[in-house]
Length: 432
Ligand code: ATP
Ligand code: MG
Image (cartoon, rainbow, N blue to C red; front, side):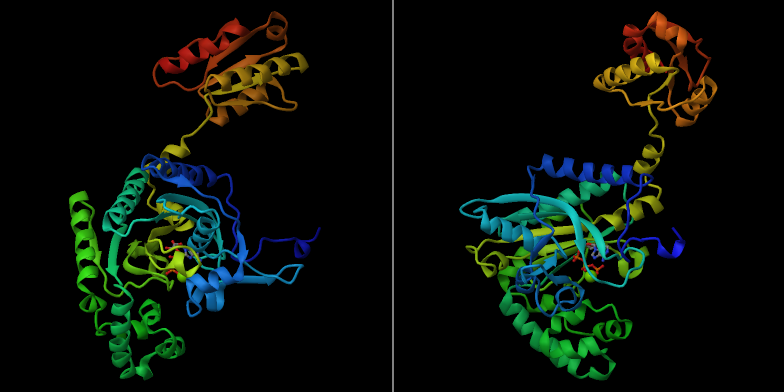
């Protein structure tokens, strides 16, 4: 086939190749482990949802709903959308399955999300999010638990220079009062605003705070702060959260411009940011969304959660050469199985199964290959030990054991019966 006709991946959608997948698996395992230690359980929802779900929860004036969704009609003429984020689906599933009915829930999810954005480093059209959602708690203690989990994930991964920013958006009366003050201020600087922001002055002015346009950002520098408009209850809750963070020794800064890209938040919102990454600096963001369950037809249930972008997290870990990345680079098999001829190959494959059952990592040579060629491959694999079954060994039902990697003196090759190989190899590995 000519190069021109070669089928390529859809723009902005990436393959995760075997060079990177070990780190992805490790990151997911660290998160899943820490979530599970805090009694969170996974929820898996479909990638396709009815379009109404996102329009009704995320907000029609957000970037996501107004210009980024992958929406199409299926063969029945129903409007479906590839999920752009995980919260709306989780709420939908919770309502549909009665998870909020007189219950509290600690949930987590992982999976691909879809947004039609301009692809660039750290911004793709399919990207993975790992996230947490909690239902049934309106107090800041649950917020502290969630932020503590994230900070433990980052600590275990060895992520550096990623800082927590927090803000409070207050209740709806607060945002109403603040909206008026913000519009009053921004109206005086209308010429300096870009087209999007000018339109939002009438549709959804708080969204302007989220603008990545530098002229708009400059105007915003002197805008009023939402924190001056908080009700007593919201101000108290925000202070309580800060006291929890202090007790947990989690560093944070208060960023009163932080509104997040979705409309459904109230009170606490937060982001973990690595300033080295410009407009793609947010690794993880979330907040409280007490109105959403009711808005989607469930009984009023407070919600709190976050989504973490795994491409950004993995990329930063790689660029920082985090310890977990180096550990994985060293991940070679314990044993490489060399075998010559059909009888030896059968014995080798049976031996591989036995070794795997006892917890070893094993690579077995497949297909043709001379002894010399296979031993070379064994060396290249980085395995600590080669187990060799040649013609003679196959007949005698024994195997040669050769230590490939060793820090001090060399260990002579030895021959043992095949049913003693696993024990011998295990003992050798411990002594290396
Ligand atoms: P940004 O401000 O970077 O556009 P956002 O506010 O749209 O982020 P959220 O909807 O809160 O992001 O999603 C949570 C996380 O998912 C982000 O912090 C980011 O790490 C990741 N993320 C969001 N959009 C993308 C994307 N297009 N490509 C890769 N990761 C993304
Ligand atoms: Mg965005």
